[in-house]
Length: 454
Ligand SMILES: Nc1ncnc2c1ncn2[C@@H]1O[C@H](COP(=O)(O)OP(=O)(O)OP(=O)(O)O)[C@@H](O)[C@H]1O
Ligand SMILES: [Mg+2]
Image 1 (cartoon, rainbow, N blue to C red):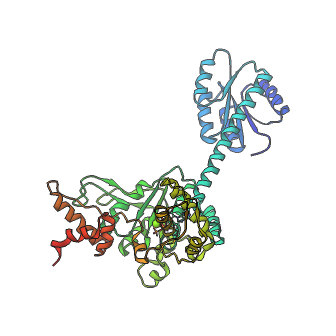
Image 2: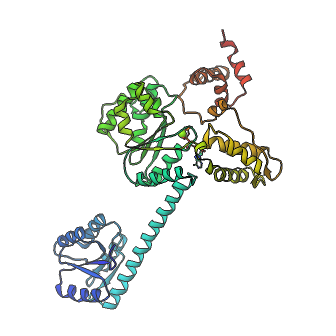
Image 3: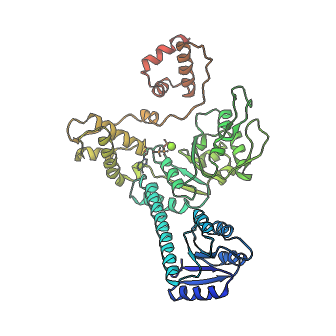
């Protein structure tokens, strides 16, 4: 913004323009003149107008209509109306539509300067407010992603650079390294932060279901489609869509996704209408995609489309200097949540954290601290216990699976059996993992399964 605010003065009375212009220029403002609505709109396009002074009655346009057009061109412009005798009612209507105030003819220079000064002050306040809010949001977006190690600092620089653009970002990193937090930050630091952030995991959802989840379906598109349903692409319109575990997507769905990314259009399943949405795509994976490419499991054309920019998250074992900071953060959070007076981690316990290999990365650290907070008797943690690596894999949040439909009239027994069976199938036959997802002891699980066993 220029140092001296630009004021647009619109009146068909040249004498008034000259007199008012002189007063404003003397007060240090830059003044642009217009004698009609048409000239005013041209000036608004051309100059960085901060405030406009409109005569309510102009030869070619009504002052109110001009006010509305001006606000479309420059949303945060302030407007002061000049009213002739007996048009105060109209000036009040203009104020309802966002004009700051009005001055009556004959224009008194002191009154004019006072109104202009106040209007510009309000504008500055509202700009400052917006800026502060943005800064606050920025803090929020990146603060959640803790770590000052050089590799995390580099990740944050990339996030700041990528967020305001619309480029597709592939977020890569081992399980528990914070990929979802990166997606959150990319969205909240972007111009789309007022829009939705929609997330879907491509893992553990059968292909046809994932397709309808992504693109939606019309009523009757398949047996269970009792009602039409919008897909995640539609729900993310105007915002961001995170495709999590993208490497798990089947080849045929990869082809369909590629088509959508190429022309931005798609149809709901069973639909005929072409839909077009404005979505920024983020993808995340813990898999090594170059290897999947080499093995022919992932399409290279899709890879290049989603990988305009890649953000790779370092494993926790490769940035051990962040462990004390993260541990302290999780400790105070868990202690507060459980109302326990634990404040410190003893030196031996901290050495344990620094020496551990962290296969589950930050998520594992968070869980290790939580467990220790539950078990610690005093006000300090003196030692940690680590879960076996197999359990760490199971600690990951369970993916949202396909839905199960049950006929009303089923008994609880039948319903339980079907849910157990479906969950075990979903877990690739791993009953222990299924029991964990279902929240039941493995023993109960085997009992449910007893009559299904050969
Ligand atoms: N840098 C970090 N600072 C603070 N918390 C973090 C950080 N990284 C991860 N976490 C926490 O660890 C947990 C796992 O993070 P997140 O879900 O983003 O991981 P992920 O990479 O998506 O893992 P997965 O591949 O298993 O889905 C979350 O509770 C998250 O808040
Ligand atoms: Mg994740």
